[in-house]
Image (cartoon, rainbow, N blue to C red; front, side, top):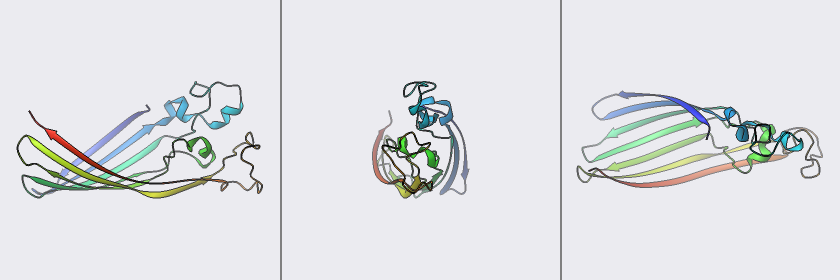
Length: 176
């Protein structure tokens, strides 16, 4: 996994509202199998995942998050949040990234926590990652001509990755 660093700030706006802001930087450039460009696949530099081998071609990424929590009462909290992180892959590196199409950039989250007793807690959360489409070259550098010809030879547009995600979380906590 790539190293990362983050800083967070929490503000108590009132007895009912808390605001949080987080920044995180993910250092994809430190992991050869993630950072190395796919062009190395056409050379004898090394196998996938080796220091000189081909990789996904991802760049370091900054991620920004903001969240608001409303404390309704002792039993129930409501939370909303927003997350933004620019796509970590350049347009020239889409081919290999089809295996891990991390192209969503904006996420919203909503959740509720219910505490029926001092020792138990239920949380339900929903996350929506908005659809995002990245276009680029499958054939960066010409080494894959036979597999991904680009008859127009006009640059980005011969490959696209698009992704949208939805998830629901249900968790239960028991305090001893």
